[in-house]
Image (cartoon, rainbow, N blue to C red; front, side, top):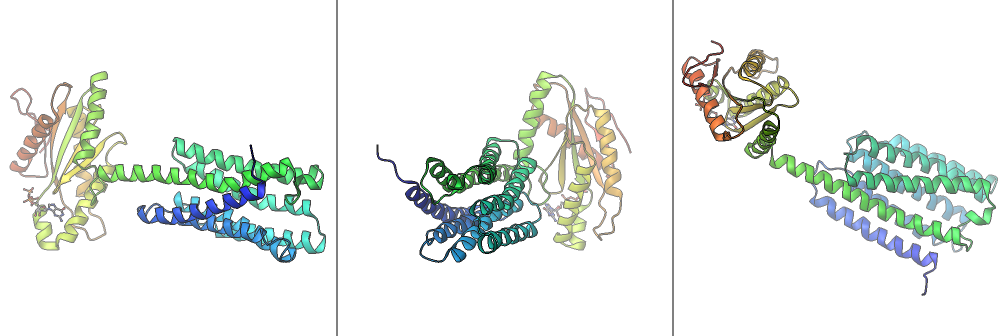
Length: 392
Ligand SMILES: Nc1nc2c(ncn2[C@@H]2O[C@H](COP(=O)(O)OP(=O)(O)OP(=O)(O)O)[C@@H](O)[C@H]2O)c(=O)[nH]1
């Protein structure tokens, strides 16, 4: 079998890097604007291609130009990947880290090339800023990445790259110079060249996987939530209810539902305008959300009515939560948004065979009574013909 020489493989890998860079820029256009970092990675790969292209002029152009430029481009490419991850995970952009790494690399390059020429010292020196960048990348992915396969795959690739760079830096100190000199023929040099050339491509595949997973989460969340308030929409609520119903079947406890309707909301729209009405809805969602436990669900199916699902909660406990919500809504805030009270109807379910629509109807009927009895009130669903009132 004929085997390609390392330089041909590096050339091919570099061409693939160029294609991958274009892919990343194209993919970026179809991702939502709030998924950042794809542009950084596209630019990083383009810079890696430039770095390899620059190396290819070794022997044609003076080393004093080719080596510093190619090495700085290599560090820049790695740094852009780290900044892409920072952007992706919503962390501050590490311009100082990148500037520091480039400055450090430049100083070492100039010193070990012109003042005390030493190939091995240059290799070890360059490993330091690259290790800083690799360490930053790994920390970002492990610290901020969601726990799924794509994250672990990307972390593994970054780890391999980090080990590779560190081992080469250490080897330069410990083994004879020709062993680490990539211009010399040799198995180790060949393996190193090929792996190094492939790593950027594999890393960007890993990053695209992580970004695609984020896209999936974003789309799932959007399809399940109300765009105005961020509360669940009917679809998201149905899924949450199905989950809680399954729990109810396994562990019989009560499941309570609050139907919350703002009082005289039409007047808010009429007096202050629809925009202010929207702000009241957003504020309501935020205040109600703050009054709930993490395990509770807040939904808005449209209009000025909100629905809250309270797992492991009976009528009495649900009434306490409803009082807390009413108290929060009555609190004036200094943002100029009008205060709007709410009427609340409460229903509970202990029988898993009961339908969601029955539960919603029961809560709605209680809500209707709260409205009919004067608003800003809480009413409990009628149970076995007897009306139980929680508050006036
Ligand atoms: N700003 C805004 N208004 C909405 C939205 N959805 C529904 N509305 C308005 O909410 C108002 C609801 O009015 P009504 O059903 O009469 O309720 P209300 O004025 O709160 O009266 P009661 O519920 O009886 O206290 C209507 O004017 C709708 O146009 C929305 O997304 N944003």
